Length: 216
Image 1 (cartoon, helix red, strand yellow):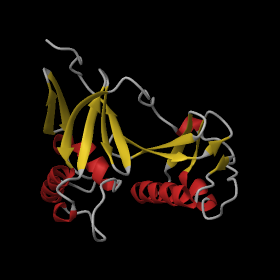
Image 2: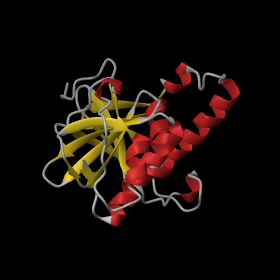
Image 3: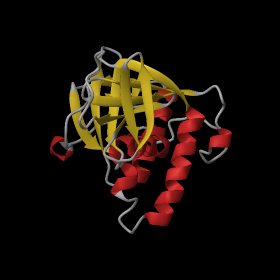
Image 4: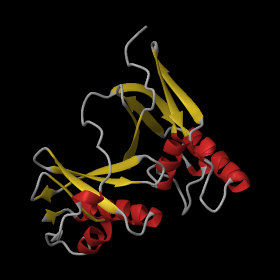
C-alpha cells in the first residue's frame, strides 16, 4: 500500500507520473522508502537516465516496482493505494546511492533549456524514426568543474531533465525565455553517477569512464 495524505504531495506525484507516462505509456515506477516520512519514485526516461521525485508519503514495503498508471489512477483519491502485484522484474539496473554525491557546480537552468532547444533542432535535422542519433545524445554539452574536479554532462541527461519538466517556467511550454534568470540546476556526482537536481525533481545517469572525484 502507498498512502500520500497531503493533497499537494499527491498532485506533485501525479504530475511526475503523468510526465513519465507521456514518455512511455507502459512506464513502471520504482517506489523506495526514504527514512520514516518520505518515498522516492523512480522512473526511466528513455534517455538512459533515471528521473526521481521524493514526496511525503507512507509505503508498506521498503522497495517495490509497480505500473505507473496504477499509482496515477489511485492518486485521485486520498485513500491508501493498493499497488497490486509487484513488477520488480520489469526494472532494469541499479539505482544511484542516496548519499556520497559531491556538489560540483550550479548551472543556470535557462542555459540547460537553451542546450535542449538546440539539441532538439539538430535531432529534427539528423534524427530518424528511431529518434535522435546516438552521437547527438552522447555528445558532451556541458562541463562542470569545482577545484580540480571536472564532470561531463551529455545531451541525453539534459534531454531527460527537460522532458520531465523539472525546471519551473511560465506558460504551457518549457522555453529558455520563460525561465527566470536566477533559477539554477545543481550538478552533483559520485565516482560512478552523475545527477542534476532541479526544483521539481532530479535526473541521474551512470558515468561511463568516470573521472575519479579526487584532486590530481
